[in-house]
Length: 326
Image (tube, rainbow, N blue to C red):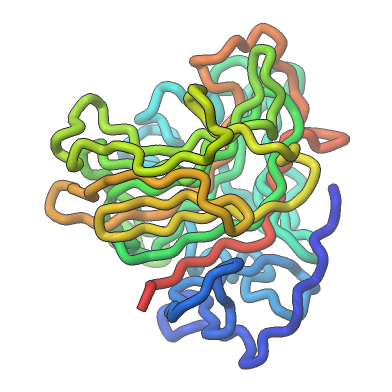
């Protein structure tokens, strides 16, 4: 895997707030101007001097791994079992475990995946026999936020890295020392900062899905509609950038206004959509970075384990940051 170039030292240093959330007043959105108050600076790496998250202990303060919508008590297996389009299951292993799906390199965090979860046969990629990494951040997020990730997309087929927002509420641990659970509110709303697939005859890294699934309830979200699309978007249901997004690191961002969503790639807006965040009980959003393998709505006839060498399913993440726009 290509290494992430070390970034300049933060002038004021990266700190961890009393609530355990890494923050830094010095980290600014890529290519943006204006006043921003940093709320989350998860800059990953074991050895880089500007890292705020160096190991699983740091990660445990801000993110959870086993589920998207529920916990083991609600889904029966500690996975994202409430959404049947997912074939892979999320697992959390101790630091240094060879099975780990959350691996820190010198200058990045790598979400990993492989087959053989139950049968221990690495070539068995049947439904439910795949495991993959996930990050669901505890930080509540509302309109008026700017969200950014710098990452390198997986290069192998059948990977589904997604960076998205969904409503939910943190619940206290059921037992002392346990992890909080996460109770979902009715879906939608949802904001997909990006989805990326490798399936059928489409190679990964050549397009971005971004948008706001509403399940046919458009009026509840202000009748979402595009205000702007990049001139080269065309009539496709996705944006197709000129570069191969698996060939290197890129910055993906969401500028979340009161009633608008601006999607950015490397500091340039490629889509702007009108949207109103309406969730039951005025529940805030939580941010998810999920690596799924083998989405059921694709042709999976050639699915085989690509999580070993040369690590085709690896999703390398340099940083994830959230600001409030002042």
